Length: 258
Image (cartoon, rainbow, N blue to C red; front, side, top):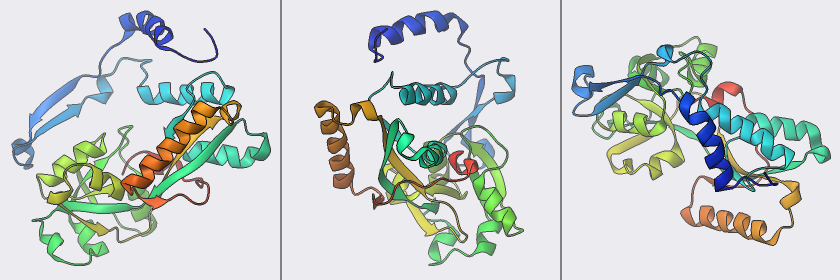
């Protein structure tokens, strides 16, 4: 295997792990059974996973380690709060570069016909009294939204937890549940016309998306072209706030959905 991972490399590795892949058991439930309208809800039975299983999240974390060593993908895009903290500590000794692309804030989303959508301001009392769908990529019972509320000695009424923003947006669109979503995601979800958004009535960290690459590729003409093209596309789409300062470290909980 050379300095980069190509398709044959991936196919060879896949052939090795394929016999050991076990999918997480799921149960499909009619949304009407949960009061969510004519939607389909897929429930992942995380507790029934086989021991020693891993998810693509862990695989991606390992990929970042490989990138840092200079052996893998030439460019990665995403939200890397922990890595940003490490790079800040390493300073000029860092072997990878993390350049910010855009930042966006979290908002509270609800369907346009929701009773709270008729009010120009969402109050903390109204937020806590409503029913919510929580997004947790890892299936945790509490997220950074719950921690922010706990610091105010408040709680919210979570009636459903899902693992993707896309699922949460669909549920909110078809029900009277609220959800905290990235503002840029609402605009790109295809459901924006049916959703109303309001500022979250308490302080939350922002999402800061950046590009990550190994410094060995810093002056590579092809990679420079790729980075500039990504920047131009992001600017053209008008996603979030334009890049400025480097992404700042955030609490780990802020990575695990809302």
